[in-house]
Image 1: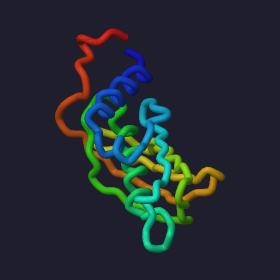
Image 2 (image 1 turned 90 degrees about the vertical axis):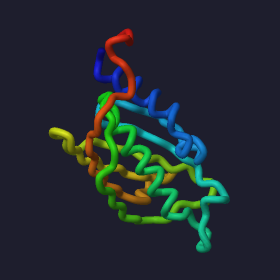
Image 3 (image 1 turned 180 degrees about the horizontal axis):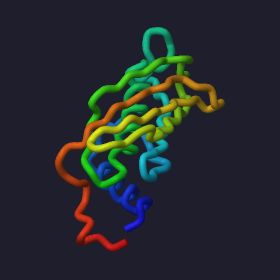
Length: 146
């Protein structure tokens, strides 16, 4: 099985069991070994008292992109530590893009950076996620073609 196909099949299995990302209207637009791209449009119920996107929703988008990137090897991986820095606000109706990139993966640990951008390309936030592999896989590779 190619690394690209493994990443795709891992993402398909995760997406089936991810009602949180689905309920927020996220889409998984690209997946590969150690990387992902997800998008989400800011709805009226995601705007805070300042009239901008609540930071928790930006964090959730970045966290979901991180999760798909670090789970792309058909091993179950969870977050160990995450941090985010907000740079500019997101506006109601704007579609945000979270691009996750693997920085390091050794043993059971990994580090991933996620950049969240607005429709005009400006950086809204930078997120760093530290991952930890746990027991299990997303699908049975022995009984899967490819």
